[in-house]
Image 1 (tube, rainbow, N blue to C red):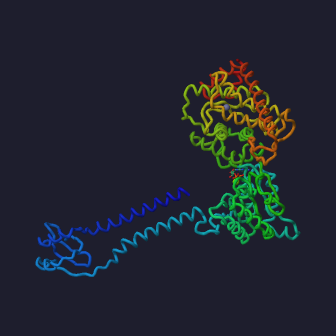
Image 2: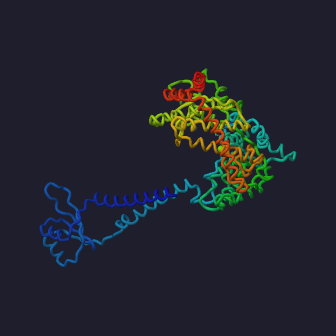
Image 3: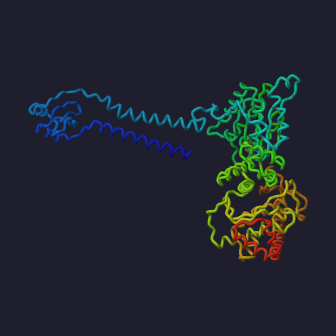
Length: 600
Ligand code: ADP
Ligand code: MG
Ligand code: ZN
């Protein structure tokens, strides 16, 4: 909003400036010299005036050409009550006429023109506002925001690794293609289908592919777009959306990011009036339409747990299709889909890349192929090879290398010990993710160095000791710093955050503390698809228990702290040597570090 205001002020200044310019220009073009009356009289007496037109307010006229000038000079002056003027003019042989002055053109220039300019700018400004805001001038009409695509080329062949979801959606496609077949037998058609899954797994893509496969119109709108400037606009939009869709049946209505709109009513610090109205309207429309006319409602969300329960009731979004992160075979399939568009070299082993990337979403994988292709171009290659693909994986994990961020020598040394500490602990503890690479080239926004650990397989469960090992690896960096430099630095903050989160979850969510027992103290709506445990609000327990939780969390971390300190003390020689090599080379591989550990 602020931007808009300063934008319009800018235009006002521009307009004023334009008006001034126009005035000056008119005068300059006519080359009229404005004279004081006294000077005019002197010129008359001196016989230099040729003609005068006497108006009611002004006198205008021409001077006799002087020297070689051919053009007579124009002048004007204010008319003053002057009894002698006519006599003087006669006396000096000046031709004069009386004119009735019309101020018409002057009025046009000085009033109407600026007004017109203002008007034009205002009109232009409003039109822009109307375009960007979608509804400033046309509240209730949503045509600008509802996207209706009739000829979608995306098919199921473009969506890979989500076979179960595709299987479930086949029926919908069947129905949209031949609604008669279903209604004849009185079959029940799903009304609302909710695609649920983490970000980037292809929910939006899948919805469009359903429309593409069935060859029907695809109406889409994003939940976040409903949140509007004026109360009532969102609700009007929903009405509009359904009306349009009914005219175009068979078709699909797709509401992306349903959670932006469908948050449980009354949740959050400020119950959002507008959102609630829109949501209510959506519920009304959903109840009011009969799917037999061939309209299927689809929606996508990555936070199903915050949706208003009313949305999920029978007859509304009652069919849930889970679109999860792909497994290894799925990842390979997705990589193959996206690799169709880039020329791969003979050594580009996509299976290898699929194995390296547990937990990646479809969007991440698409990103890897894209990054790899860009890298190949930058290196002047014709084909994308395995080295580009591997580098692309690292980029997607860790952000871009920032070679230009300069650390001073002390900082660099610290980072080297820190990362070697992480890596040494990870290598020493059985069952930790394999260390692939250690680097002290700054990457991303905050990372000064990093230890690249990749899981060797997809994991769905973690044991208590594995969680403890994770904490140990995270602590390794800080403890190495303390051992070598005698004090900690700020570089370990992110590690500590993760450590604390894991320990808290162990105690509160997974019942892994003997002292508190096998009990879960966390029950509120946990995001289902967020991998890192989030620190949640205080659950339903006493102050006493809260204190105990804190003690247990501290105990778990302290135990691991002890353990890692001992481990690194034993391996100090390897730590020092590893950090030295890392400082020298900036990047070393996991196997190189293992070799150093074996010799020291
Ligand atoms: P979501 O809506 O689940 O957040 P999108 O559908 O917007 O994810 O996916 C973003 C992009 O990632 C897609 O345009 C596509 O290029 C790629 N992508 C994601 N999942 C898949 C998949 N299963 N198969 C192929 N490409 C995918
Ligand atoms: Mg999406
Ligand atoms: Zn660290």
